[in-house]
Length: 223
Image 1 (cartoon, helix red, strand yellow):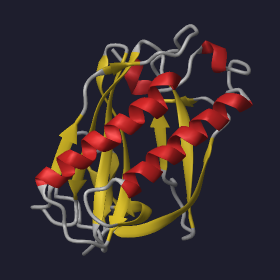
Image 2: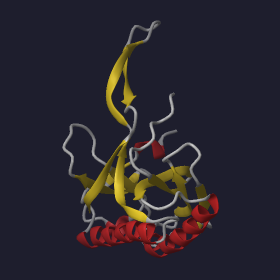
Image 3: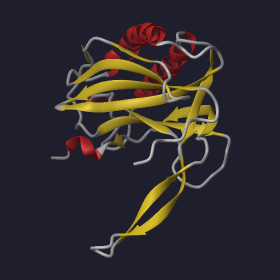
Image 4: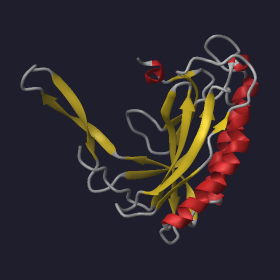
């Protein structure tokens, strides 16, 4: 696979690493545009620890004991040599109630001003227990409010405690359209997303909302 194109503006990629049941490869990512001096590895490490501490306060009370917050990572994706860092101590969720299926998640939909066809930016958070369900398909209004508050704080602390001067929460679009290829053996056609050239598109996040329906990450329960 070719490398992803660099963003058209200076951007940091933030990632939360989770453990959900037996799956320790879960992650949630978002992007923050910056305008200051590119951060060093040491600055990224310091920022990660500060942000992780804040997210323990925000997310752990919303997590089932079968979910663990592992670490926060920051990577400057503006160049291939940008600073990066990581910090965190594996922390178990404390929310009461029967755990949900590993595939269940709170879905946060993000809104950008640019209109286009295709998927819009979103994040999945492994939060909630059975007591947070209004019915088999939707969250209670109180839980939606709690997740909205937690995610708002996540973005706010990322901006306030970043490793350099932050501009704001953004989405980065690395692909535009696709190209169809035919397998020379099976003769079946398949599509590959086409990387943008020369740069990935950066869009400010105008707003976000917690979807009332329970989100799903089906690969988390795959054998």
